Amino acid sequence: MTIRDLTDKLGCRMAAGTEKMLDREITGVYCCDLLSHAMAKLDPGNVWITIHTNLNVVAVASLADAACVVVAESIEIEEQSLARANEKQVLMLSSAKTAAELSFEIISMLRKA
Image 1 (cartoon, rainbow, N blue to C red):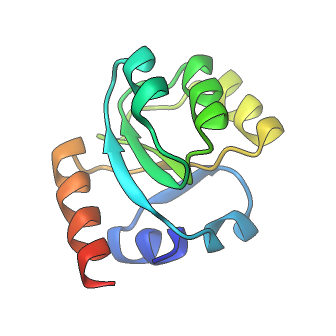
Image 2: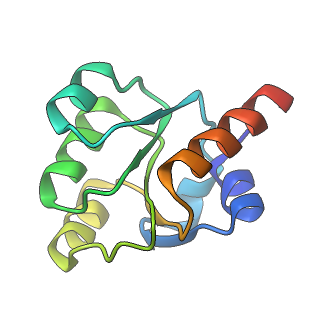
């Protein structure tokens, strides 16, 4: 399953990144708001669901080679984070859904793929 599949089915909005980045394959999903824990546990290719939007999210996503970051609950992403995400080629998506809803739906989609 690709990120494009995820955005099409879940209605996520692309906040940072490029259209080409949507073709990346997703290997799993990880939901966590503690940045140090996410840095240790996030696997390459995972969709990372969080409510945090600061620069450190971009750094962790880049270091872990996350497929993308999905910011839940329509929380506004800081402008400096969006600029850094574009610079570091980190795809950031936004969703009105809760982290729990997103996790459940993405895991369900991955199991069907």
